[in-house]
Image (cartoon, rainbow, N blue to C red; front, side):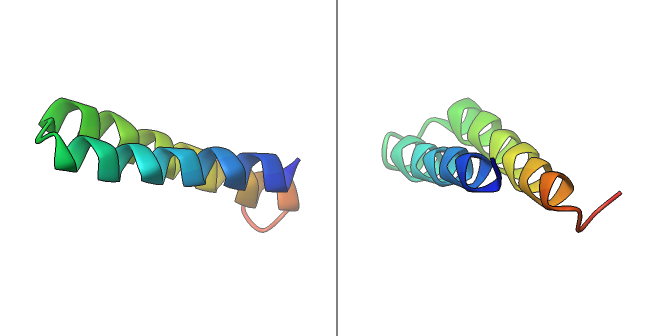
Length: 50
């Protein structure tokens, strides 16, 4: 499950890069928030945080 969360985080990172090339600030912000959420979910699932 941790790897699935990290895969989603990689997708969010790709979304940041895609939206930055399109100069879409709101899309970049959304992707950045999703990146943080997926990384925290992976860390939580693996037992490294809270």
